[in-house]
Amino acid sequence: MTAHTDLIARRNATIGPYSPLFYAEPLHFVSARGVWLTEANGERYLDGYNNVPHVGHANERVVAALCAQAGTLNIHTRYLNERVIDYSERLLATFAPELDRVLYGNSGSEANELALRISRQLTGSTGVIVSDYSYHGTTIALAELTTGLRTREPLGAHVRSIRIPDLDADPRPEADVLSETLADIDAAIVSLHDAGYGVAASLFDPLFSTEGMPRVPSGLLAGIADRVRAAGGLVIADEVQSGFGRTGTHMWGHEYAGMRPDIVTLGKPMGNGHPMSGVVTSEAVLDAFGSRNEFFNTFAGNPVSAAVGEAVLLEMEEHDLMARARSLGETARARFDAFVEQYDVVRSAKSAGMFLGLDFAIDGVPDPVAARRVVEEMKRRNVLISRIGRDESVLKVRPPLAFGPDELPILLDALAASLDAATVPPGH
Ligand code: PMP
Image (tube, rainbow, N blue to C red; front, top):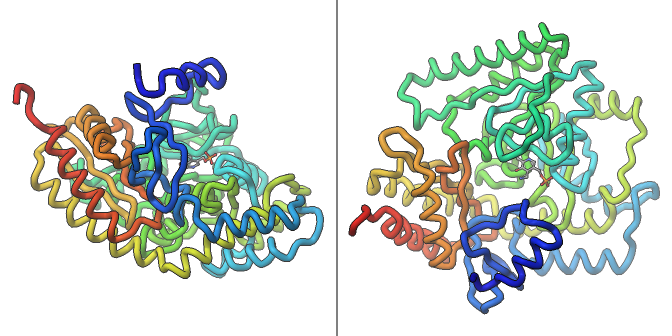
């Protein structure tokens, strides 16, 4: 019996049990504000995990913008609407000048699907290169290239996956690791050409979030991009997790990673929970696609979404959330580094601004059990985090960007206590 046995039974009897719930005893939240959520039993939980409520749960500016626009006009995109143009200008101003066009969608999956469709049409090829532990969405085209997360969809014959190295777990010199991975890319390209698919695109998350935030050789993504372009493909950066200032130093993960994509896909934090996504690209790419396709998406880029998206950007600006992610991220990273020293089972610390991880391994063997225990211990201390990586051995700490200096010590102290509790040797 858990506190929510009845609700779980009703859930299983309606939407089914196959979309897994977090935690041995699932949580049932009834409200949230800022970085705090309230459980049905009245207890408050600190959100150290969710990146969708980017500027804070139930953010006042976002809610007010949504309600005001919904109460004024909400309509599809076949009529002129200034709000959508205003938002598009504001959003595109955060990108490098050559990325100056945007198409909208309603989910990260839709954005990636459209990016693939554009790539296929422009190149006349179908081959795609991804990492061997990645997730980009729910559609058939994306399920065919899903290598991380459980899916029974067979890998498409036109898909090649490469292993993303982690220098924290690989003793070889960085240059050797880099050249090996780039050789894997070369081999994937040759294989796609030999099989007659050619190269339509590469599709990578610049932070390799699903992969567990490996510390990759510098220049890896730029090297991949060069090779993919030379092979005739387009370079897609999936910024569903890495975008909107998460890294603290750059608005976009591809900038942080030092690469120039042809297409950037946006999602999750873009609407702070309101479903919206984007495909950002160049005028040349949009023209090549648009001249062959009349593109229409009923809900995407509607005035309510534009109002919400604009409120998110304004909140980020007003509270300088990117700079905050940088400074809090540095403080958190220092403590994470100390955990590596302190606990044998913690192999390495990972971070990019306010996206942090701790990798658990014993004698080089990943230890997902320890990671799971820490996640549960954090829950006992009313702090939400999760796990990522091919072995689910990397803690995932990725709070709303609205996370503040008052909350960080609560999370870090809870983590220290959870590590103590979870790493007690058996019999003690
Ligand atoms: N890309 C990445 C990197 C993601 O993490 C996700 C969602 N986890 C998606 C795409 C798909 O986004 P959505 O669930 O909004 O379709």
